[in-house]
Length: 604
Image (cartoon, rainbow, N blue to C red; front, side, top):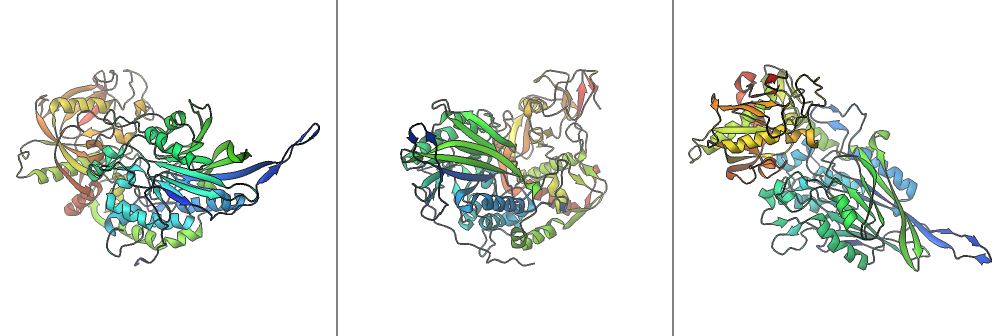
């Protein structure tokens, strides 16, 4: 079905110095509280209530739909997803609180994550002449977002796509620490300010400071290097919060695409903390609340004490994919002619408690149907069912498919170069625990579910010693388990809070991972071509761009010599490989390269 390319709403003016909206908001009269005292009556105390709503890490989820399973989304916890549900929740709160007393924010990672967003970035790109309006812009415009912070995944498709998306939004994309690399001035609006009129009292000014993740400099280096730079959140918050207060802000809210744990996944490659929202609250005076993003965890309310003022800053992170909506309720009191924040309380509301807003589902039905048809295209036939169910702790053929494709692409790319004679090895991670390519017809959605990220391929040169260190680091994913202890596969992995996507297979070698041993001493019997690995041997390492740029802080790979890279997604390369073969037969790619052991005895 052809798209309606006229689905576009005019964007409000955005300047590099921030966005101000004044004189446009009416509110009911401020609450007046009168208290009696001995000998007379005190003056009425003026009060006012405001509500700030927030989402984060939407990752292209408009509908409660799983494009990889071609069915309504379901999980064991009963969650529901999508902006259509969020719209219903927002409408309820606006009705409850009065729309003129509310703000709606998001903390980033908007335009990447589902086949819906991939389609309008790559298949029918919004950057094409006369191209479509991005479905996330359409949905968020219709819901009435006030401001959105930039997420790191906003940069996955390049700056041109991001700027086009920005032009289609009726709200600003905020990034106080996304700076022009040459001028060091903000490349996006740092803040948004909205004025709430209170009859019979001064107006309330609410400032929203947007902060993004400094890891962008690593993860999307190919797109941003030399163009944008991303200093730390604490540093930029300390610069901008006093400015916002001097501009008359009575309330300061930060929308931060940064988790609250104080940890980083990129090691010491940058002098900044990846998940620094709590540090911002602790170190920077003048912040009342922070909408937290990036970490994909649910934090209904987290109270952090600012070390300089002793005041409490309230943080909240709603669950990703529009499964939750954070709600901050502010109570203000007028003291000496100026509004002061008396209290802040945060809660989350669950998307599974409401139905889709039909306004949103109707708006994007054409786009949804188009993408459903795209992902259900048949590209080949599988001789066997392939699954990731055990891929975390057993060498699974379905992951070998990824490494085989990466090896073949890099080998072909290096033909005729000085690196063509070097052996090619490859890494891949068990991204999903539920992916399955069924025997029989293979569709794009089957293959997309295997590789859920929009990563691209890079070729680096590593020595045997560096590969050994890489494997040792990867093996830290497993919980140390003594020989003879009962194996519980649910508790065997994710040691050191390491997610599945930061555990790597490496193809082309043979090795054991002895989980009875201490970290750093687990890789045993490491061989190449049947002989013990030579530490001086050079390899071309086929690696995704996230890992190549330092994601996961694996040793050596980020600093290794790069000999080739491309912008085509690995997911697309897998689909091309299967399409060219016609038949997906494990005999062509599956091999048992590694196994878990305990004191030399296989675990399985």
